[in-house]
Amino acid sequence: MHEQGSWMMDMNLKGKHALVCGSSQGIGQAAAMALAELGATVTLTARSEATLKKVHKALPRPADQDHGWFTSDFDRPEALETLVKARVEEGRRFHILINNSGGPGGGPAHTAMKDEFNNAFQRHLICNQILVQALLPGMREDGYGRIINIISTSVKEPIPGLGVSNTVRGAVASWAKTIATELAPDGITVNNILPGFTQTGRLKSLFEGKAEKTGKSFDEVEQGALAQVPMGRFGRPEETAAAIAFLASPAASYITGVSIPVDGGRTKGI
Image (cartoon, rainbow, N blue to C red; front, side, top):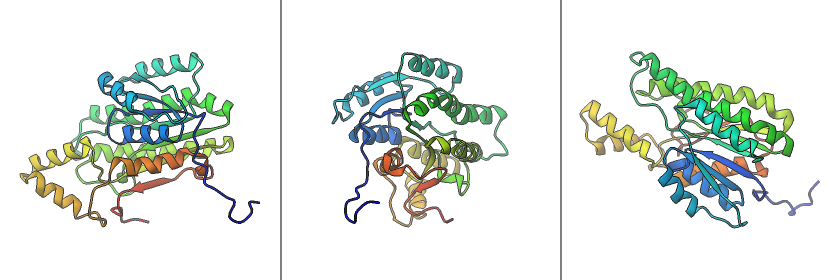
């Protein structure tokens, strides 16, 4: 047992390698920065090569990390699988996986076309599964694994006007809970972060879409959203990244199978 006063939270990620999806902007970019600051070597992936290069250059290197990046398109699962397997075959080990991808567009569930569901299911759940299966052997061999899925508060409370997203996000949360139980004996944790209203390009896009459909101004839509948040403000990507970094650290070794809202108190359920 630790003597009183001797315990310190272990947030050191030196020697760990993280793959951060959707890391060219928003929450993904903030997560990559936070993990790198804690000493992790980070591999970025997203669609935009130009943006990835900029983020890669800006990543902290407190432990002289050799960060990397590669472009990927989560609308092409087979191509993603080939890319990731090639890196694993080169001998690269990943200990931390941040599953993060842009959400489906808005609209009611009952009017959505089947391709909208199929595409969202592939982008979110199938690609997550591909990445887990590719990286899991290395996690097991090195005795360290953290799988963190960036989903949405719609997992706990479906959001009006986001029918496809609500459906697919719920499927990802159920998948994550299932594999959390399966991988717990290996000491590999699987958790979900549920961002609320966060200052990202997606939030702006959703507000613009709602304004167009309802005839309200952008400011009216924004103020209506703010009124739902007890803290009275939108979250910053860095605040969500802080929760991600904690779950990725050794300090969170006994936390698995949970879904944590980072939403300023907006979610009403316990």
